[in-house]
Image 1 (cartoon, one colour):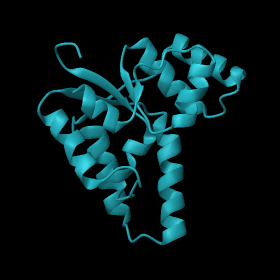
Image 2 (spheres, rainbow, N blue to C red):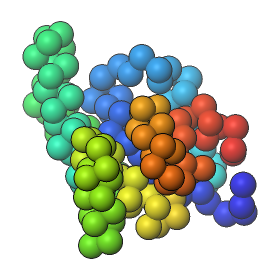
Image 3 (spheres, helix red, strand yellow):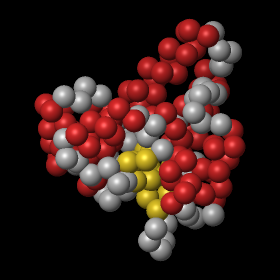
Image 4 (cartoon, rainbow, N blue to C red):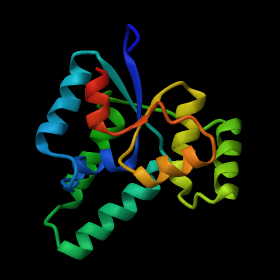
Length: 159
């Protein structure tokens, strides 16, 4: 690992706990370790507003499916925390990132959000934190770099 702060772009999965949504592969200890890495200036966490498309869908689905008791105020607080706390930095795709995402789509990757996030991470020399092993396999099969596509456990080992 190089010196300095490691830039990490988060997949939508890592945003869900902010809304009280449990992610099976992400324990409270994992969340605490990610937070600690940020507080110790080991990492900067980045998000893209394109992730809201997926986050809104997943949060809405969980609320409907499980009848989770979360108020509008709690949802707004979670959104405000994500956008305004300074804990996360927000980044948008460039023209070339969108073009790469389209190329991945044409090659057969149907998850446009992952395609865009991967492209943003490549263009900005960031780690892309995702638990999507099928996406990583797809990238490998098509000759794309995956050395910076990892999940939180792999990130912990690099830090």
